[in-house]
Length: 371
Image: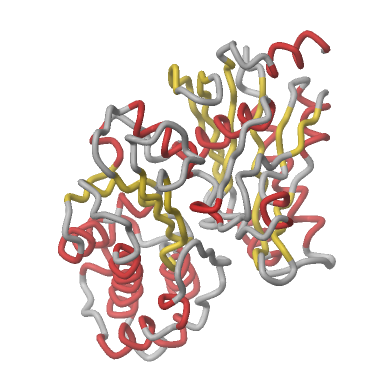
């Protein structure tokens, strides 16, 4: 095992890393392999997805917003079992990046909480694991999120971008990364600006689950039949969060009152209004970009919603396209990001900086656990 640790920490070698991500949409665990030295993307490997069952989603949902208590243990069991199943199917990896499941996030108050034990995974899988990516950033005054921007910087280099580009991740919560690919490193001043744009899929998912028993609004079919309630949209945009300067981040349930704004609406009108709120939050976020990006590349489940994508296309002043337009995999980008970050942590490289989380100085968060 000493040889494994030596290989992983040797900054001159390309590592085959496996990243796992379970997002706030609670749909399941993404896992993807990335070949990298922690700076440059050398290749993309296989990927897989392990969906959560309805029962597992119910268990995880009960833990949301909880910092301690009886609901966390069964939720942790779900997280560990699901990750062990999907990660054990991969062979020949040198390192695993394990994000865990975020259930509570309040960096200016209690901190941030991700369920899962990376040390236990390392022992059961026989592979070194990097985990607990967010705590160090929060302890140094950062928001602890978003953490994918350093990988987005590497993606911009990989795709050969020559001007500013933005990556927009639409999961349960939306977040944007503005990248200047002419900078040498992601921690260089002016290279990155990243922050949460507002709620994305979570409110719509919760609405259709509660009213119709559906996991999400597939292809935006429900929203497509509705009309946006402009009064509710205006109340949403009046929230103080949108006036705050970035970096800034949100918990999944920070805008839970949004559901209340659409309580009296029909299913279709409510879904359309919540979808419009996501797009409006992104439009507000664009005002903070240092310079207009040449295009916005959309990743996460939201890019599969044609209603949301049309709303973004209308409200933004630049091209909007799914990340597949440049050869990336929008379903696996976050999992690939934690593979990339795991290598950086193992090699003592920073994973966040003032422009991404508001942390006081560039920091490499994460715990390295050997089997």
